[in-house]
Image (tube, helix red, strand yellow):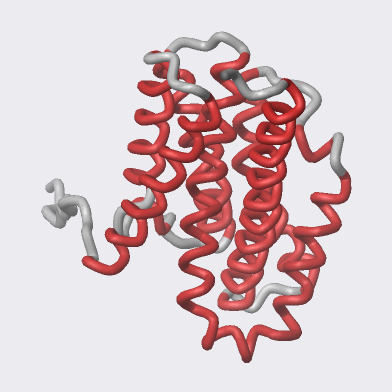
Length: 221
């Protein structure tokens, strides 16, 4: 017996609500991480707000510009701007107490990476882009904010020099596209990718998995 339409609608609404909550938590956590990065560079309050904004919403903005997907998401939801800037400024007040929340931040950051990657893939897939563009759109959404943050803070982006991060985004995007190609139910696809990506990221942190490093010091005469 098939579920009633109302039950299906309720389930889908629940899934959308869950993703929205995760997204809001993710942009808040990313904004706070951006504010901390700005603080390490002794930036003023305006600098903190800018870094918090680009860290939280920069990935989605770059994705939308690359895909020609207008209007850009946060322009239609100004409450997101208030949320991320507010979170960044709040961080300047509570930063001294945040060292005790490191593990929580790592979890929230992992959730944010995966949620952003899945959202990016979903947007590209809905517009009929080919596989490679879907995967790149997901990765752009997942890691671009952190890259812009680190560039503005005058340091090599974390995603290029520490434990697996961009690789997790790539794996999640590949799995999402593959399950979509196999016509797996979208909600099941999201749940599998989210759980698998989160487990992958947390294992990478715990076991200190890293990609091989290329180091070249020879000078050209």
